[in-house]
Structure formats: C-alpha cells, structure tokens
Image 1 (cartoon, rainbow, N blue to C red):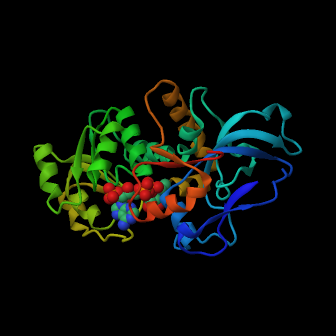
Image 2 (cartoon, rainbow, N blue to C red):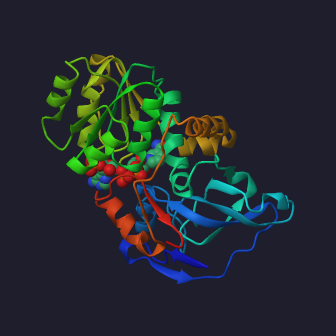
Image 3 (spheres, rainbow, N blue to C red):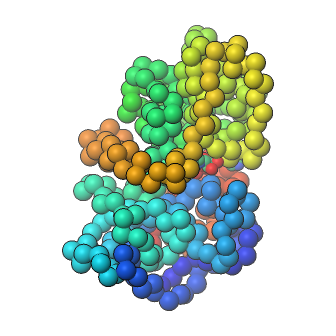
Amino acid sequence: MRATRCVNYGEPSALKVETMEDPVPAPGQVVLSVEAAGLGYVDALLVQGTYQVKMPLPFIPGSEVAGIIEAVGEGVSGDLIGERVMALSPRGALAEKVLLPVEACTTLPDDMSMEAAAGFLISYCTALYGLETCGKLQPGEHVLVLGAAGGVGMAAIDVAKAMDATVIAAASTPDKRDAAKAHGADMVVDYSDTNWRKSLDAMLEKRGVNVVYDPVGGAFSETAFRCLAPGGRHLVVGFAAGEIPKLPLNLALLKRSSLVGVDWGGELRADPGFNGPLLHKLCDWVVDGKIHPEPTASFPLEEAGDVLQRLLTRKMVGKPVIRMGA
Ligand SMILES: NC(=O)c1ccc[n+]([C@@H]2O[C@H](COP(=O)([O-])OP(=O)(O)OC[C@H]3O[C@@H](n4cnc5c(N)ncnc54)[C@H](OP(=O)(O)O)[C@@H]3O)[C@@H](O)[C@H]2O)c1
C-alpha cells in the first residue's frame, strides 16, 4: 500500500509517500480500504513533535478516516466486508489501508460522501459536545465562533445553526469570512482588526454574545470574553494561535460569565461510551439535512504534507480532506 510516514519530527512539507506492506487484521480488527482521510491542526503539530503528547516514531499521521471494510480478523463477522464506515484512527489515516478495532467503525448514513465523513468525527463531535453539553447553548442565543473558517470552526457554525442559534463568525481574511458565511454564519467579523470588538458591538447593538466558541486562544480570547453578555459561557476549545492566554479573573465577575473547558478527546478517553449518542444525533442531523459537513477542499495523498504545512501557517480555508486515488 501507499502511505505517508513520519520518520523524524519536523516540517510537514518534508513528508513523502512510501510503499509499505499491507496490514493484516488481528482478532477483533478490520482492514479499511481508505477512501478519504480528514486532516486538522493537531495532525500538523504531531508531525512537528510539538503537540502536548508526542507520537512515537515512525508513525503514519492522520486521525480520522472513511472507507470500505475489505478484510476482517478472527471473531469479526464477514458480513461487514463491503460496509461504508468512518472511524477515528489515532494514527495511520494517511495510507491506502488502515487497521482498526471493529468497534471503532461507524456505518455512514446512506447519502454521506466519503470526503464529508472523513472530516466529520472530530470537528462535529467536538462542536456538539462543546455547544450543547458544555456550553448549554439555547435556541435564539448568539454564538461567536473564533477561527470560524478552520475545520473545528466551520463545524461549530453548522452545529450552532442546527441548534437555532445566531452565529457570528470571526476570521482573519475576506476569503475565510466568505467561506464562513457560505457555511451558514449569519454575520462575520474581521478579528485581525484591533477594533474588532467595536465592530461586534455595533453589529449586536452592544447586547453581547451568549457563547464564545474558542479554538484559537492568543490575544483573541480576552477580547472575545469581554464580548460576553451576562450569563455568557466562553468555551475553551484549543490554541491554534500558539499562545495560551491568561484571563484576568475579575472579568468573569464583572461579566457574570464563565470559562468552560471543552476536551472532547479527554471525555472520550475517560468514558469511551459517551460519544455514541452524540454521534447518533449528528448522523440523524446529516440525514435530515440539518447539518452540511462537506469539506472545503480535497487533495491527493502526495499533497498531504503541504496541506499540513498550510494548516500550521494559517493558509487553509475550511476542513481539508485527502482523497486516496485522486
Ligand atoms: N477541545 C477539543 O476537544 C478539540 C478537538 C479538536 C480540535 N481542537 C483544537 O482546535 C484547534 C483548531 O483546530 P482545526 O483543526 O480547526 O485547525 P485549523 O483548521 O487550522 O483552524 C484554526 C484556525 O485558527 C486560526 N488561527 C489564528 N492564529 C493562528 C495561527 N497562528 N496558526 C494557525 N491558525 C491560527 C486560523 O483562522 P484565522 O486565520 O481566521 O485566524 C485557523 O483557521 C486546535 O488547537 C485543536 O487542537 C480541540
């Protein structure tokens, strides 16, 4: 099989496609013929060796896949061969085949494309967990999504709209703001402008937002917290800006608002069963047309390293997906 392997930590653009042995399923495992793999900012950090958890070398990057089950190990029903599924694969997605425990696989809704499914699990489950479970988002509330044209941000726009919220998308360039709007955002704000809080106040007639969805961190976080209305919830999702911000605690008091940590991966590790109902709900929303998880762009395997590099350098618009055989 062809695969992209990381042998040394470093710039993702140095990754190369290699030919490797096909995997063989052990008991309880399946071999997935990968059709598409979703990429995110964390995958780029893992290749650099700068993520909070280091992946032992060598490894095949990529954490989420969609494809067709082509072989099963002992104890797994042969009826599953040919099934269209999506799965988290903590490593190994940037390959034509991947080994997975059978219980990691979820059957795709009929009309869901492989590209949509490959970029779905992490960003959409995080969005629903963040907005509903952690953020207690209510219909009619206003949500400010930072990094709104990133993979995690785009999913948050879609899920917040499905929950009948009004979405303000913050992004740094006109093409990113256009993409956020095309994905359902009601309003957009250029948060690279130092006066962006004033623009937001003008848009909302100083009413403030009820929820901030923050996968970015850095200097944006404190400004966003200051935009909260009383009773607001600032959801800490990630730190794509690189800097972990420090918030003066008096702001929580003055704004009568809370800071809420959102660690979907941590929750999954603590309670592997918790995600089933969440994913079930999201799949129903796909079938009902309430959410629209299409990736913004798909690329061949040979370009995976460049795609990861673009994520690190803030040059990607939307959720990128690698299409095998493209
Ligand atoms: N908590 C959880 O459970 C969970 C789950 C999944 C991912 N995450 C986290 O979510 C974050 C976003 O992931 P993603 O895959 O959506 O990434 P992404 O597609 O690269 O989007 C991140 C966005 O952050 C903004 N940004 C601001 N400063 C940046 C910088 N210096 N470098 C790169 N981007 C910058 C960019 O938008 P602008 O150019 O518009 O500013 C970019 O679109 C990551 O930190 C990841 O660890 C958390």
